[in-house]
Image (cartoon, rainbow, N blue to C red; front, top):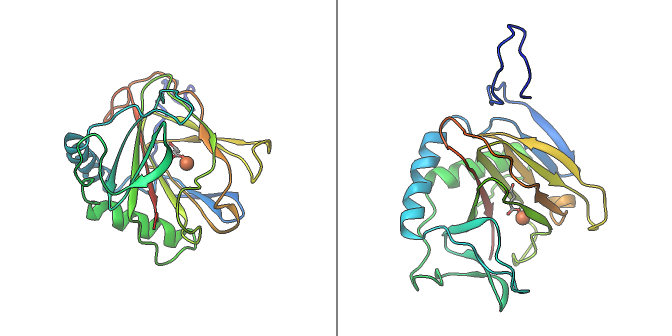
Length: 222
Ligand code: SIN
Ligand code: FE2
């Protein structure tokens, strides 16, 4: 929003609930503020994961350095390098398994998926994306999972971002959805392979996350 409130005060773009759901497409829903309760527990878990598997800028198969910094937790982690996009059980930087999936991630993912109509979701991989001002993620499909029956659960924390949600073809017009701290998007079923991305992050200072946006995407890789 970033607008003048009724009182004349400039108010921050903040997620204050109430929890509402917005349909994004057939099979895709945005659960506003769904992760707000318990967000401190998510932040503690992200700090632990980042201390064991530091965020890094991976390289695309075409040789570009990604502007988003990434790490993972769970049995598998999503990686990219000159050899391609894939899931790996080990962190290539350390040679060690990725940090385990925190119970708070599993619980949030299961509840959000159920709320979106996908009961019984048990993710085995969580990609953690860190966007600093200017970082972006171009339109892509999540295609590296073994089967597409399970949905994707995507949790936004920190600075507001513009989430792009398109269709089954790259050229389909993408909706631009403002996502705030605590919002959770879920897509599966008929929209499981829809193109999506994130517009370049605008600078700002979030009251608990500072100058960054963190996104968790919980997936079933195998
Ligand atoms: C992703 O597609 O992996 C991340 C999407 C986001 O950061 O909202
Ligand atoms: Fe994605």
